[in-house]
Image 1: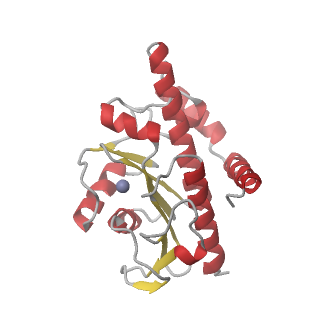
Image 2: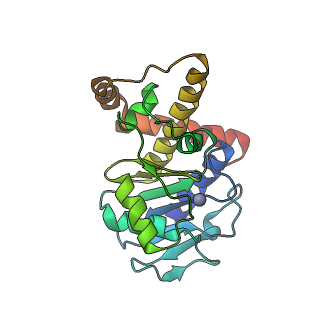
Length: 232
Ligand SMILES: [Zn+2]
Protein backbone atom coordinates (compact mmCIF):
# COMPACT_ATOMS: atom_id res chain seq x y z
CA UNK A 1 0.00 0.00 0.00
CA UNK A 2 1.20 3.54 -0.79
CA UNK A 3 2.64 5.34 2.19
CA UNK A 4 4.75 8.32 1.07
CA UNK A 5 5.15 9.58 4.66
CA UNK A 6 6.70 6.28 5.78
CA UNK A 7 8.92 6.24 2.68
CA UNK A 8 10.09 9.81 3.40
CA UNK A 9 10.81 8.88 7.03
CA UNK A 10 12.86 5.83 6.01
CA UNK A 11 14.79 7.83 3.40
CA UNK A 12 15.56 10.56 5.95
CA UNK A 13 16.71 7.93 8.48
CA UNK A 14 19.05 6.36 5.91
CA UNK A 15 20.59 9.78 5.13
CA UNK A 16 21.12 10.58 8.82
CA UNK A 17 22.74 7.16 9.30
CA UNK A 18 25.08 7.73 6.33
CA UNK A 19 26.03 11.08 7.88
CA UNK A 20 26.51 9.52 11.34
CA UNK A 21 28.77 6.84 9.82
CA UNK A 22 30.91 9.52 8.19
CA UNK A 23 29.97 8.52 4.64
CA UNK A 24 27.83 11.56 3.85
CA UNK A 25 29.04 15.09 4.47
CA UNK A 26 27.01 18.32 4.25
CA UNK A 27 26.42 17.90 0.52
CA UNK A 28 25.16 14.42 -0.34
CA UNK A 29 21.71 13.29 -1.39
CA UNK A 30 19.69 10.11 -1.52
CA UNK A 31 16.47 9.47 -3.41
CA UNK A 32 13.89 6.73 -3.60
CA UNK A 33 11.44 5.99 -6.41
CA UNK A 34 7.92 5.32 -5.16
CA UNK A 35 6.92 2.11 -6.97
CA UNK A 36 3.20 2.91 -7.28
CA UNK A 37 3.54 6.41 -8.81
CA UNK A 38 7.10 6.64 -10.13
CA UNK A 39 7.49 9.74 -7.92
CA UNK A 40 11.01 10.56 -6.82
CA UNK A 41 11.55 11.49 -3.16
CA UNK A 42 14.84 13.24 -2.31
CA UNK A 43 16.26 15.36 0.51
CA UNK A 44 16.06 19.08 -0.17
CA UNK A 45 19.16 21.04 -1.11
CA UNK A 46 19.16 23.13 2.07
CA UNK A 47 18.38 20.53 4.74
CA UNK A 48 21.23 19.51 7.03
CA UNK A 49 22.22 15.93 6.27
CA UNK A 50 22.80 15.38 9.99
CA UNK A 51 19.24 16.25 11.00
CA UNK A 52 17.20 15.68 7.81
CA UNK A 53 13.64 14.59 8.58
CA UNK A 54 10.57 13.60 6.55
CA UNK A 55 9.60 17.29 6.16
CA UNK A 56 12.91 17.96 4.39
CA UNK A 57 12.01 15.52 1.62
CA UNK A 58 11.00 16.97 -1.75
CA UNK A 59 8.74 14.99 -4.10
CA UNK A 60 8.99 15.15 -7.89
CA UNK A 61 6.91 13.43 -10.55
CA UNK A 62 8.46 11.22 -13.23
CA UNK A 63 8.97 14.33 -15.42
CA UNK A 64 10.93 16.08 -12.65
CA UNK A 65 8.18 18.55 -11.68
CA UNK A 66 7.97 19.23 -7.94
CA UNK A 67 4.68 17.90 -6.55
CA UNK A 68 5.41 17.99 -2.83
CA UNK A 69 7.63 19.21 -0.04
CA UNK A 70 9.19 22.56 0.77
CA UNK A 71 12.58 23.72 -0.44
CA UNK A 72 14.34 22.91 -3.68
CA UNK A 73 15.83 19.61 -4.81
CA UNK A 74 19.65 19.32 -4.93
CA UNK A 75 21.38 20.84 -7.96
CA UNK A 76 22.75 17.41 -8.92
CA UNK A 77 19.26 15.97 -9.34
CA UNK A 78 20.12 14.67 -12.88
CA UNK A 79 22.28 11.98 -11.24
CA UNK A 80 19.07 10.53 -9.86
CA UNK A 81 16.59 11.18 -12.68
CA UNK A 82 18.88 9.86 -15.42
CA UNK A 83 19.85 6.69 -13.53
CA UNK A 84 16.17 5.94 -12.88
CA UNK A 85 15.48 6.51 -16.58
CA UNK A 86 18.24 4.06 -17.53
CA UNK A 87 17.63 1.40 -14.89
CA UNK A 88 14.15 -0.02 -14.29
CA UNK A 89 15.63 -2.26 -11.56
CA UNK A 90 16.85 0.69 -9.45
CA UNK A 91 14.55 2.06 -6.74
CA UNK A 92 17.07 4.09 -4.73
CA UNK A 93 20.10 6.24 -5.63
CA UNK A 94 22.64 7.80 -3.26
CA UNK A 95 25.37 10.33 -4.02
CA UNK A 96 27.92 11.25 -1.37
CA UNK A 97 31.62 11.90 -0.80
CA UNK A 98 32.91 9.10 1.47
CA UNK A 99 36.52 9.54 2.65
CA UNK A 100 38.02 6.26 1.46
CA UNK A 101 36.16 5.31 -1.74
CA UNK A 102 36.52 8.89 -3.03
CA UNK A 103 40.30 8.70 -2.65
CA UNK A 104 40.46 5.76 -5.07
CA UNK A 105 38.90 7.93 -7.76
CA UNK A 106 41.48 10.63 -6.99
CA UNK A 107 44.46 8.27 -6.97
CA UNK A 108 43.41 6.48 -10.15
CA UNK A 109 43.89 3.23 -8.21
CA UNK A 110 41.32 0.52 -9.03
CA UNK A 111 38.87 -0.10 -6.17
CA UNK A 112 38.61 -3.91 -6.27
CA UNK A 113 37.14 -6.60 -3.99
CA UNK A 114 39.71 -7.30 -1.25
CA UNK A 115 37.28 -7.89 1.64
CA UNK A 116 34.17 -10.08 1.68
CA UNK A 117 31.78 -7.10 1.63
CA UNK A 118 33.56 -5.78 -1.46
CA UNK A 119 32.47 -8.85 -3.43
CA UNK A 120 29.32 -6.89 -4.27
CA UNK A 121 31.37 -4.83 -6.71
CA UNK A 122 33.06 -5.78 -9.99
CA UNK A 123 36.19 -7.89 -9.89
CA UNK A 124 37.67 -5.58 -12.54
CA UNK A 125 37.15 -2.54 -10.29
CA UNK A 126 34.39 -0.02 -9.60
CA UNK A 127 33.96 2.08 -12.79
CA UNK A 128 35.20 5.68 -12.67
CA UNK A 129 33.40 8.65 -14.21
CA UNK A 130 36.32 10.83 -15.23
CA UNK A 131 34.82 14.35 -15.23
CA UNK A 132 35.11 16.20 -11.88
CA UNK A 133 32.38 18.74 -12.74
CA UNK A 134 29.17 18.72 -10.71
CA UNK A 135 26.45 16.67 -12.45
CA UNK A 136 23.88 19.36 -13.20
CA UNK A 137 22.65 18.58 -16.72
CA UNK A 138 20.75 15.64 -18.20
CA UNK A 139 23.67 14.92 -20.53
CA UNK A 140 26.03 14.66 -17.56
CA UNK A 141 23.52 12.47 -15.70
CA UNK A 142 23.25 10.20 -18.74
CA UNK A 143 27.05 9.92 -18.89
CA UNK A 144 27.18 8.91 -15.21
CA UNK A 145 24.42 6.34 -15.84
CA UNK A 146 26.39 4.94 -18.80
CA UNK A 147 29.53 4.61 -16.67
CA UNK A 148 27.53 2.92 -13.91
CA UNK A 149 26.16 0.45 -16.48
CA UNK A 150 24.40 -2.44 -14.75
CA UNK A 151 26.48 -2.15 -11.56
CA UNK A 152 25.83 -0.93 -8.04
CA UNK A 153 28.43 1.83 -7.75
CA UNK A 154 30.40 4.35 -9.76
CA UNK A 155 33.25 6.59 -8.58
CA UNK A 156 33.20 10.23 -9.66
CA UNK A 157 36.82 11.34 -10.04
CA UNK A 158 37.82 14.02 -7.55
CA UNK A 159 34.24 14.23 -6.31
CA UNK A 160 32.62 11.18 -4.67
CA UNK A 161 30.53 8.13 -5.45
CA UNK A 162 27.07 7.09 -6.60
CA UNK A 163 25.49 3.89 -5.33
CA UNK A 164 22.19 2.29 -6.32
CA UNK A 165 19.88 -0.40 -5.03
CA UNK A 166 16.47 -1.88 -5.59
CA UNK A 167 15.27 -0.14 -2.41
CA UNK A 168 16.55 2.09 0.42
CA UNK A 169 17.92 -0.78 2.46
CA UNK A 170 19.95 -2.31 -0.38
CA UNK A 171 21.29 1.07 -1.52
CA UNK A 172 22.30 1.92 2.06
CA UNK A 173 23.98 -1.47 2.59
CA UNK A 174 25.84 -1.23 -0.76
CA UNK A 175 27.11 2.21 0.32
CA UNK A 176 28.40 0.91 3.66
CA UNK A 177 30.03 -2.14 2.03
CA UNK A 178 31.69 -0.05 -0.69
CA UNK A 179 33.31 2.25 1.87
CA UNK A 180 34.31 -0.65 4.15
CA UNK A 181 36.09 -2.42 1.27
CA UNK A 182 37.79 0.86 0.28
CA UNK A 183 38.95 1.48 3.86
CA UNK A 184 40.45 -2.00 4.14
CA UNK A 185 42.07 -1.83 0.70
CA UNK A 186 43.68 1.51 1.59
CA UNK A 187 44.96 0.18 4.92
CA UNK A 188 46.24 -3.05 3.33
CA UNK A 189 48.09 -1.05 0.68
CA UNK A 190 50.11 0.58 3.49
CA UNK A 191 51.39 -2.90 4.48
CA UNK A 192 51.94 -4.42 1.06
CA UNK A 193 50.15 -5.12 -2.21
CA UNK A 194 46.51 -6.02 -1.34
CA UNK A 195 45.51 -9.53 -2.37
CA UNK A 196 42.42 -8.86 -4.48
CA UNK A 197 39.77 -11.54 -4.97
CA UNK A 198 39.87 -13.42 -8.26
CA UNK A 199 36.82 -13.22 -10.51
CA UNK A 200 35.71 -16.63 -9.32
CA UNK A 201 36.24 -15.76 -5.63
CA UNK A 202 34.32 -12.51 -6.09
CA UNK A 203 31.33 -14.34 -7.59
CA UNK A 204 31.41 -17.06 -4.95
CA UNK A 205 31.57 -14.71 -1.95
CA UNK A 206 28.95 -12.41 -3.45
CA UNK A 207 26.55 -15.32 -3.91
CA UNK A 208 26.88 -16.26 -0.26
CA UNK A 209 26.60 -12.70 1.12
CA UNK A 210 24.23 -10.72 -1.06
CA UNK A 211 21.00 -12.24 0.13
CA UNK A 212 17.98 -10.68 1.86
CA UNK A 213 18.83 -11.99 5.35
CA UNK A 214 22.32 -10.42 5.29
CA UNK A 215 21.04 -7.15 3.84
CA UNK A 216 18.38 -7.04 6.58
CA UNK A 217 20.95 -7.86 9.27
CA UNK A 218 23.23 -5.04 8.09
CA UNK A 219 20.36 -2.54 7.92
CA UNK A 220 19.03 -3.61 11.35
CA UNK A 221 22.50 -3.25 12.88
CA UNK A 222 22.88 0.35 11.72
CA UNK A 223 19.30 1.21 12.68
CA UNK A 224 19.86 -0.22 16.18
CA UNK A 225 23.17 1.63 16.48
CA UNK A 226 21.41 4.79 15.30
CA UNK A 227 18.65 4.37 17.87
CA UNK A 228 21.18 3.99 20.67
CA UNK A 229 22.95 7.18 19.64
CA UNK A 230 19.72 9.08 19.00
CA UNK A 231 20.37 9.38 15.24
CA UNK A 232 17.09 7.68 14.30
ZN1 LIG B 1 28.60 15.76 -5.23
